[in-house]
Length: 449
Ligand code: NDP
Ligand code: 2IT
Image (tube, rainbow, N blue to C red):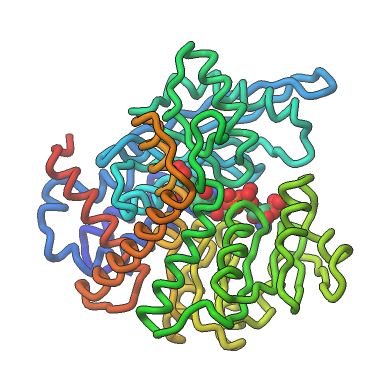
């Protein structure tokens, strides 16, 4: 718990206001514990109510999304947009379509997004949205009608200078295309910068699809080099998930000389001691939205196992959790440590529970927190917005160069911030503090009323 009375009172208020929002409380507590290291040097935060403002979203919209299934029946889901902070730029953050989506999860994601976007160095505020709609097992027509209905309400709350959604779990290129088509039709004008992750033919950026996974590896490589004089070369890597982030993390880790031996989805995991053959995974996941278990049927020497959590029993040097929140608990973290890992970098948002982070830090593993490690996706969304504004298209190499430089910059920023707050190498604290100082400075400069 925090030493500061001020932070403790802010946290009590968060608990009292939303006692059921466990994920949001978890994300807030993790940040406040880091701010405890610096808040004593900043009496202006309490005097101006900065931290109580910071933990309360500027606006939340919640709406009904009716759509028609292939049998002609009306179905109804719930849609949300949490517009958390616009202190340093328009609200920015992804949309998640998954049956588990609720306000607690979207508030935790929107809250983390404020700090992540601040760390990118780009002028982007923080937001998140989505729906409890499950795209799994739905036809393209059903997904299209859902997206059109979702946008028919959302359009009035977003805009290229207001709020710029993108993808997240369950929202990829197909969904962004349908959402953009509906926005353009309603507005009767072409404001490409209203969404990111668009198709290349209509305002998307080269490199955005790869950006989160590639960026995760760029930051990890920089961390390994700077803190251990080491690299991905020759390392064994385990990656959870097999979606957008996991696939391109696998691609870049392999390109940097590592051997990725396992991937998962929500039903189970595959283990391939010879190194994952990514062309097979892409064919299964991107080609026909299949299950990862198919890999074991197609690749001799690989095995498939039920239940996604068992993946962390596979020994590795570097663990890259890239599926979802709270997938690694304290016991799994102990297994990862016992098996000899040297580094953990979070590709998913908040995949490690607080006990797990504690286990890694106590054992001296390098730990790169999500806000920094997976910021490459939203950073490249920022580059997509820039290209839309100047009506230009940068080459893949140019975008990738900028991404590498942003990720290296983030690592050094959070490393320096950890040293400045007296906990050198604690990158979780460094990320929270470096991200927060910029946003708090902007809030103070603009007045907090
Ligand atoms: P995708 O929808 O492309 O893939 C998600 C993957 O995670 C799938 O393999 C999915 O398995 C698995 N998964 C999802 N929910 C669960 C669950 N409850 N339990 C176990 N496995 C699960 O999403 P992304 O790859 O885009 O996102 C993955 C993570 O990365 C999320 O935490 C997201 O917030 C984060 N992220 C994404 C960014 C982006 O640019 N896309 C940017 C930064 C962070 P299945 O198919 O069986 O559901
Ligand atoms: O969690 C994230 O950073 C994302 N899902 C990407 C957000 C974005 O606006 O590109």
